[in-house]
Length: 555
Image (cartoon, rainbow, N blue to C red):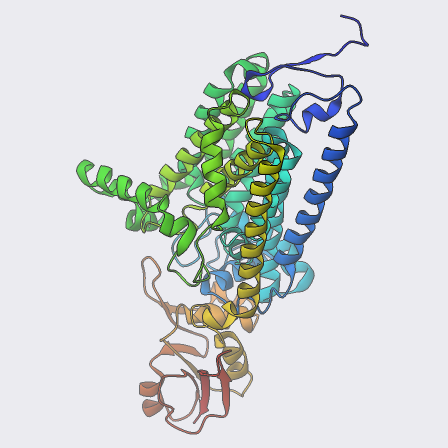
């Protein structure tokens, strides 16, 4: 075969070998063969790349604007992650004095994964200890996930599919709130997507060094969120079995990547061996594997049915207002039609192989979520989102290329689906930024941080903060920028066990303020809006809906 003749592209999805001299085949692996000039394909790729750039910019903007005010308030987990990062920055230890914790952060005795807290050191170091810095850390991980999905989309379903996938994630009722919430779950989505991108770059380009990068990223994902420990091994087995022919020439690099993952897991294994009871306390409260075999199988089945139910996916979503804006499914309703088209695409040889792989990916992620209670938790099921989104993109590309339908019919149906998707996405984004802050203010303990900071500045003496709040001590540490080296070494009155409360430290006490008001000769008292004030408040904070949030009384 002479150099001027078309060269076959091996390992094409669906087992199809294209014969084309054009590099765009690598970016549009599912599209038909180019024409002699390739101008039509070049125009299509240019338009798709432009749309991809636009939706990426949209996704970045939506994840970084108004981080301090949307959601309104500040969740206790966000405050804990932020203060631990601040403590690591200042002292090299977490709030409990654990020096450079690698396996887990003690936090509220739930021993959460450390990657997110370490990643917060940079934004907190640059912008200070404030809510927007913590949420910026989550937003950056969310943006990394968008970029990773764009790469995976290009490699599996082409530029058109990548643009659709990123557009769906940009306005997703599942992905957008998670990317703006200062919690470690978003790091699991980002690291596994980045690792998958490296894996598919290795397969598509036949470059073994990407398997080493993928191994490092999969190893890093073990430090992101606990669900990855159940997800990564079966996902690797599924991918290795499915792409065994493509991976065979790179088996040495594949083995090296696996060794990297094992080496990354060793610090966690060692820490678990030394501290099994406290590190597994949280797991034993949520795992279905702690039940008998009969109940395990039943609960896993119920979990799978719930996580795939139309009500959860398209209609109502999670009932946890702090994690999911009410009135929307976890996905846009238009994605139901896209997923139906993805199932239809399985009958087309060109789409079948990619479709089957994505369904296997989705099944593994869904099974991972079903192992944890409660069902329908948007953070536990988060790893389902990437394969679902890619399947939606695959189904829509299948519709674009459906030769059995007329061009006019394909355009009409495609336009209808995309327009409905855009309308629903715009409606959700409007609700999230305009109405959701007031709806979720209570769940984010709106006003507690400013009330604590104000009380701390009202003079000497004891400060009593209501115990009708979730972990109020962390708000004192965060919003007063309490010196971590001081907190690590002073006497702290606290209970033991998972999520056990801190009862007092320094001059701060966390108890019933009404009882404390009667017994203390003088002090500063922080009460919720629904607790009766024993005297005229000197400071009042109202929630976004106008109701009383917190009041401060001085005696």
